[in-house]
Image (cartoon, rainbow, N blue to C red):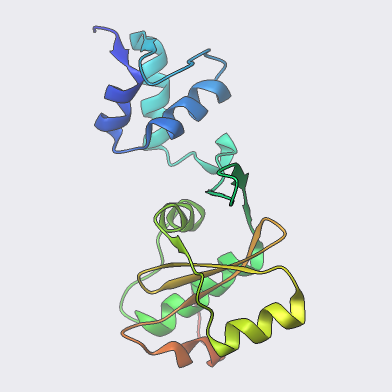
Length: 174
């Protein structure tokens, strides 16, 4: 097979070029830009990693750009992962959550927008806990404190009250 440029492989895999560059760095290949040429072996390693949904092992973290346009990597707390799993079953009882919840959340977060106009509830949270950022993407609101997604609120067609519902512990969620 012929060599391939980083941006071409990113397009093929439906990923951002930056993600492919991060994967290259993780596997020890010195790719410096979107125009770097990858030989077939390296490209195949990347394809395998992506097809195995191996993003968490690659230490690829969601991030946002701060007010100085600097990249701030964030982690996803176990609490946030569990809350999405619980809320998913309430919102979509006929479907199970995605298999790779970490990747799903990272992808949703990458398309989110930082909120600048806070609701009363969000303002109270900021007053109570200090520096808190809110990001939204469709039905998902990501609550970020100290570079960690601490919780994720999910609504369905404006049904934000679902966040207050406590799941029934007797229901098997496997």
